[in-house]
Amino acid sequence: MASPLFSLLQIKSIILRNRMVISPMCQYSAEDGFANDWHLVHLGSRAVGGASLIIQEATAVSPEGRISPEDLGIYKGEHIEKYKQITAFILSQNAFPGIQLAHAGRKASTSAPWQGNRKLTLDEGGWRTVAPSAIRYHEDEALPPLELDKEGIAKVIADFKAAARRAHEACYKVLEIHAAHGYLIHEFMSPLCNTRTDEYGGSFDNRIRLLLEIIEAVKTEWPVDLPLFVRISGTDWAEGGWDVDQSVVLAKLLKESGVDVVDCSSGGAVSHQKIPVEPNYQVPIAERVKKEAHICTAAIGLITEAEQAEAILKNGQADLVFFGRASLRNPYLPLTFAHELHTDIIWPKQYERAHVKENK
Image 1 (cartoon, rainbow, N blue to C red):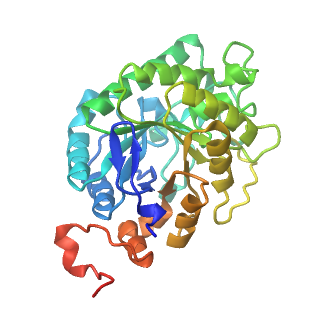
Image 2: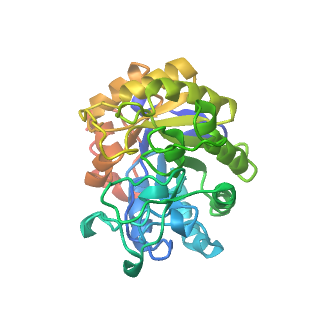
């Protein structure tokens, strides 16, 4: 029987050669948002490794939207040149390049993980962060974020729109909006982060307003025949926060808005979250959203084995499987999984002599 993990999937005008997607993973290796050869090799090697879609790390739509000073950005036209080199190489490997557009909100202006992952001061090259409400992520932070006013919200929407235009110019074929992990859009969605009393706070419809407005703005610049993904945190894992029931309702609205895939992650909104981390712990979120909202979903989170990923697809729990840390450990994960599942796939011709076929 054919392997579900290595079956084709058409989303709008693109046909993915398998269901294995490289998840966006921050590299903290850029300067002023500019990509360099590290990003080319990091992303390119995963295309060589056989994944059908490689989604670039959270790429900031504005300088203040970066998680760290070393994050990638797409807020300048000058950023595009290197991205074109990256996307051209990925496409040359029969894979599709994707980009995740992001704004870190109150979780911006932090140091890289190997530098302590702490809030940076202005003297250290940090900046004042923004959020839906002036609520600190960590109570010991020196300053709360600045609450965005209407002008600030309009700028965020305009920044996403301009970033989508640049992403298309840079030849990305999938665009993902980052509305998860406690970053700006998720902060608006979660009642634990958003205490506004205007049309962007309070009710469910008000809290999701920013995301829907960003989608509408992005669609004016992103081609209608190319896929649009949204990553959500299916639950905050905290009492009184965003939950799976709300995610299902949101997913139905996202489908109506023209979104093709909901990428189902979780957590990140508050520091007191209690996440029951174990293999497949987020898969039930993808399954509920898929079955109740009738939209394609991606499963992610501690999915590390070939049979494990195969079962998720075979059981109809998701349509795609995203790989993060497992891909960092093995850039050629699809080649490895295909061998383990006794599925013969096309290898890069430069590596063909290492391909141990089942009939040999």
